[in-house]
Image 1 (cartoon, rainbow, N blue to C red):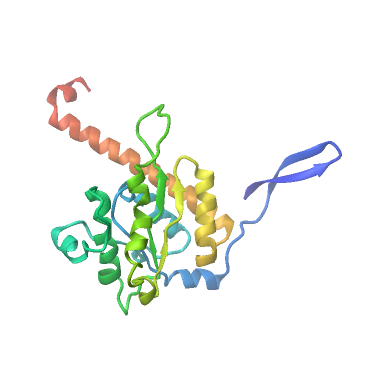
Image 2 (image 1 turned 120 degrees about the vertical axis):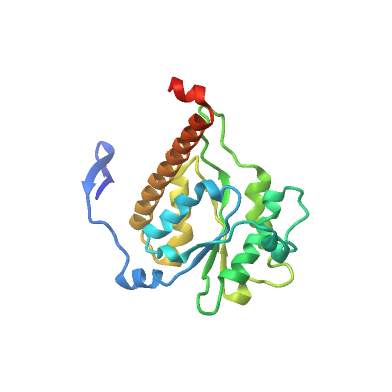
Length: 235
């Protein structure tokens, strides 16, 4: 793979392009990752960034069926798990408690246990609007992962009793180099992945997210043309 090597000489520091082997983790580490199940709540900005994280995990060796999203929001889910969260009036944030409950009590079983519940703190998210000053997420939304961690560990640590690790790193889609570093710091030790494997997974995840965004916009455009005959005739 292509890389840059920093060399010191009598004329100062030089950045020299080099080629080197791709650093892969051991076959044992790859085999171990095949058995890891990761739960992700189907809530908030994870709807728009889900393709990024799903692709990342699949690229580092997590099996497709082992990236587990909680069920869609519904009355039964809310009644079953809606008592663990805060009294915040924001329903999209408050409903996350039901999704964490759904992962803990429905998707985690003795035969198919979850090893991790991944609920990243998304401080900045992708935006379709050009020339914005910033793309910061709502602070209530960004803080939801910490609120859920507190809610499910206050009296009983529901994660520990099920041998599940709750993972909630802060991630910014406005600084992808920082996101790559944060994901490696988070998952490198847990999954035994190398930095090269992490960087490759990030690149694949970015492509998947771009494809998803373009697909959403194209479908929206087709729907708009069908619902507005004047627009369709002009196009």
